[in-house]
Length: 216
Image (cartoon, rainbow, N blue to C red):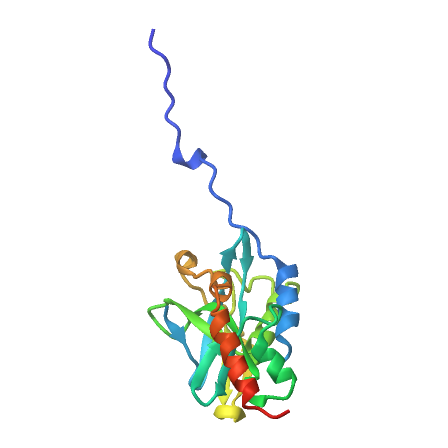
C-alpha cells in the first residue's frame, strides 16, 4: 500500500517577519541630534522618502556620525570618535579651539521621489533636516503610515543659502508617494557604518599637534 505523500506548499512556510521600528530608540536618537554607495545632496528642493534599515534585529531610521572639518591647516576632515568615546578633538573644542568643532550628520537611506530610477541613496542629513523628519516619524498618531512603502508621504526639503548661511525647511507632502518595497532589500546598515573602527592613533596625534600649537 502506497503512503500518501503530501507536497508542502511554499505558502505554508512561515516567512521571516520584519522587525518593527524601535520608536524608543528613534526618540533617543532624536534627542541626541538637537534641534538644529550613492550619495544624495540637495541643490534646491527635494522630495524624499526615508527607508528604515535593520541593525542587531531592530529597525532604525538614521545613525549619528560626527566629523571634524578642517581641524588643522593640513587636515581637511577626520571622523570623530563620537560624543560618548572621549574624542580628544571634542575635548579641544570644549577648551576653546574652534577649529575642532564637530559637525553632526545623520546618515539615512532615502529614495529621491523625483528620480524615475528610484534607487536607494545615502543622505548625510544635517540635524536641521533630520530633526524635523524624526519628529514627524515619531508622531504616529498624526502620521501613521510614514514608513509604509505604498501609503507613506514624502518629505519636501528646501535649501536656501550656502556655506554657513545654509538653511533648510522640512515639510510633509500632502499626497502619498510610493516606492517599490523591494528597495528595502538594498538599504545599508548605516549604524554599522557609523560604528566602524576609527583611526584612534591618528586622532590622538592630530590632537597633540593642535594642542602644542595652540594658546588657551
